[in-house]
Length: 114
Length: 310
Ligand SMILES: Nc1ncnc2c1ncn2[C@@H]1O[C@H](COP(=O)(O)OP(=O)(O)O)[C@@H](O)[C@H]1O
Ligand SMILES: [Mg+2]
Image 1 (tube, helix red, strand yellow):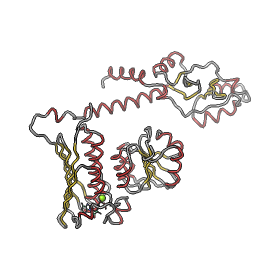
Image 2 (image 1 turned 90 degrees about the vertical axis):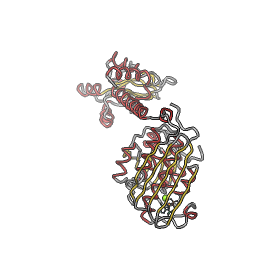
Image 3 (image 1 turned 135 degrees about the vertical axis):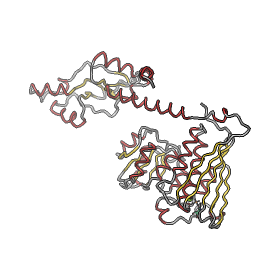
Image 4 (image 1 turned 180 degrees about the vertical axis):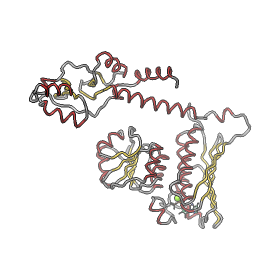
């Protein structure tokens, strides 16, 4: 599914990056090493971490984008880096459980299912 | 790109791109039985100058801001859309090349064309001249980007150099305790490996393991350095610091073991998975450490087939 459609259907606020790209599956974790170990290329990542290292992790893993939950705003430097590296950062007021549920309903599953 | 080259490239793109690639898919429609008086809201809210008229998924006309203004002047606001809309409309199919749209715009001088799917003749989008321009610019940008990348590639480097042994060395310095800069060395190494034309899987494994080691330097020491040696057979990365050292290396290698302080954990590090991740993503890992002297980590990733296909 295209990230554009996810953004539209979940009413996410796009604050950086080009959202015209395919999403393979989803991964949710607030531990960066866990994301590094278990997320896969083109995953959408759901987290409440907002500091600049989320961009590095997304970049290394070539993730499709990062959804920040609970209405959390990224730090300024995070935004700047994300813009530089073209990593989509998307904001939602919803908590993780809800947003993951909605993604699942839309057909975005975990890596093990695909 | 010089002028001539750009022109031919644009022409090429108008054949290559499909109408479906550039058209607007998120379209507003109205029904033919809607009174003209309600048209204002639709056009105004969406900031559009015309809207397709659809009954049961079938396109029956198009109604524009000019039609609305005429009705206003003639005080016919109660008229229905179907009485005032243009009925014999020219359309395009989504799978037609962009050049067909360009020709139709030239020929008819309209501001927009509704786009139908060839299969079921349903309305699937609308295309304006500005959609065409935007679509071509976007494509040009990505074409340009690819060309830049290709120019940067140095995949042939090992083949071109004549020597008994060749290795490349890249060195990065890592600041301690500065999480704002953490990741810059590994991201830099990743870009470099990409330009060397190494395969994506190799690059990913090298970059991820370097990142975890870099984070450890940032979290636990006052700084250190990363040196990558690349030869036709392997990437060797050495990560050194003069920090506090690790008292029990065996223990540090166990998944989940962490001495990360609270502020590091708050940032999402300190899961005790860094060293295990490095082990997982590399072919060989050697960790040596002396308390109060520092830590020396060496990792090797083999390049069985070291080049991308060009
Ligand atoms: N360069 C280093 N200098 C000192 N201690 C280190 C270094 N790298 C790792 N360690 C120690 O090893 C432990 C495990 O490291 P790691 O597996 O990366 O997990 P984490 O960093 O999440 O704690 C760390 O908590 C720390 O005590
Ligand atoms: Mg670590």
